[in-house]
Length: 119
Image (cartoon, rainbow, N blue to C red; front, side, top):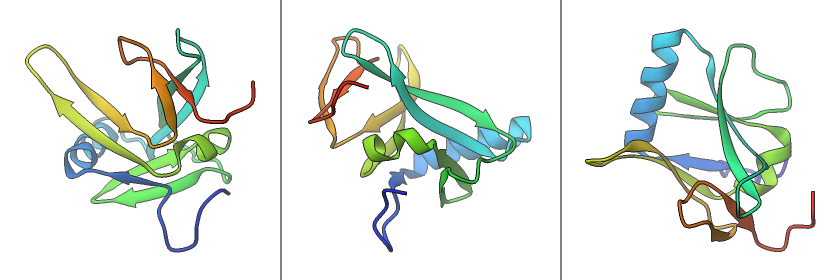
């Protein structure tokens, strides 16, 4: 929808691909859909959900056995994002390195985007 021919909408690091593949296999899901929604102190939050039946309008990115589907309304916000998976002593989870983000809240759970009108 908002893609550039020959360029994937998002990239997935090997650690993230391994974790997504593991999650898909354990639940028998077709992929992992990512999106954004209003919420949090900075205005927007990332969403993630298992997908069994992909929507025909989803942008599909497949890499190293992982399948990520990008919800249509999120494609313009996520283009150019790198999805990583980090493990530390206190927590583990997916991290979005998104060049479109202008600021994030202190806890890192919500974000706002550059030059985006009120949705």
